[in-house]
Image (cartoon, rainbow, N blue to C red; front, side):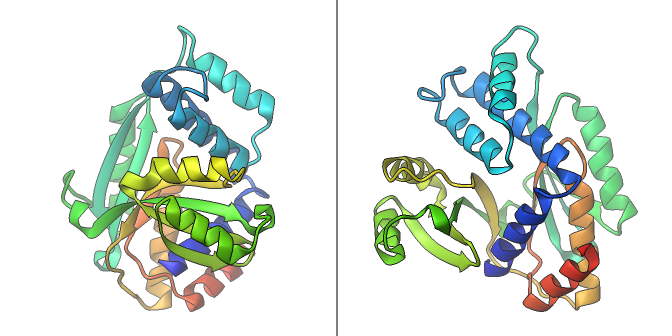
Length: 254
């Protein structure tokens, strides 16, 4: 899990500096739209899902006026009609891949996801076939510089809010909770005046598979192809992310 967290944080830092920012904005706007339409309206005080979506939009440096426009559009009659769909399949070497999408055209999304799997040595499976390999967890990424109290004291406060695991990586503290404690952790962070860089429910692999670096790079490149699709919100997999693999990927992306 630590490797997954470290690689995600590296991608966060790089993503804010390159062409992926536009895609991050697109995904953030979709998250806001779904939160407004399904979560109880445009008032973040009364809509926890929208509060979370706004935090995530800020986490990718989306301007305040863009966020406000997205909320306004989502609450209007001409709002986009998005639905959330998931896909499960296997990549090369038996690596399980779970793809979450938000789309206004399911047929387009199905065709795109199937094509990415098939063109890269993978295969699309049936829904529910990989559920047993992943556990839903609340994941909160917090910038250490925003923590004003002693880190140990801060962690004790978060344990009261449901924190079950902590990972420290460079400038970030990643906090994990059980799926059912996501709301209480969000409330605890608000109480402590901490706005996370990112907070979401993720599918964490129960077990990971380590591959030779060359094969593992192919898996991460496949994951990146999914992430480059505008309909894709999140991609989860059970590849073991080793330090050696991270070093090689950073060289490729330098």
